[in-house]
Amino acid sequence: AQSVAQPEDQVNVAEGNPLTVKCTYSVSGNPYLFWYVQYPNRGLQFLLKYITGDNLVKGSYGFEAEFNKSQTSFHLKKPSALVSDSALYFCAVNSGAGSYQLTFGKGTKLSVIP
Amino acid sequence: NAGVTQTPKFQVLKTGQSMTLQCAQDMNHEYMSWYRQDPGMGLRLIHYSVGAGITDQGEVPNGYNVSRSTTEDFPLRLLSAAPSQTSVYFCASRLSENYGYTFGSGTRLTVV
Image 1 (tube, rainbow over the protein chains, first blue to last red):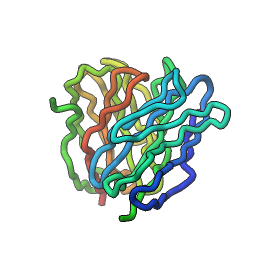
Image 2: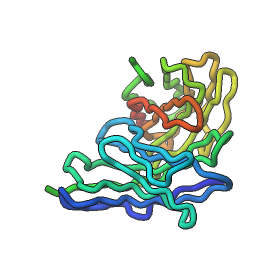
Image 3: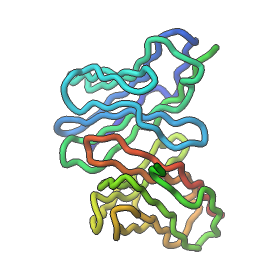
């Protein structure tokens, strides 16, 4: 069975500082990895994905994520946090081609402090 | 572009009642899924579909039915509502497993 762990329920960071939201996964086969963001009382929005190729992937709103196969991690990063980045972030995984079920982590609440 | 449209946005049911949550997408996506979101639990997959006429169970299917008669529509039926089904329900669609999901705005369901 595939699974995703987001070890931090909440991350606090000062505006302008770099931010990292952690994600580790467990799948059989090659993972397809995704990050989503959810603003209050809204649906989830797709940020970025890793399917294959370069381990560093760039996405919307200046976010990027690094795929590390040996550590089974896919941490979300941004060089300089904005107050408007405050939201709930979800990591998700499915186990490659032909895998239909996308499994989500429990989410990490990011608070950017002015 | 409408994207993924869910109706209703809010619903209150009494225990034992049945209802259907509607979901429609206009992007010609083959893959559609229903998730429920509960505090501290993340999103859990209820049912999913990989094309018209093809559905399968996810992680928490009990008490829910789905059908997919067209590419566009993927309704979720609650057969006999229970308080444990109080949740926020999201419908999502994507082109294939290589792509991110587009989510609807959600249905907040309360069962009393």
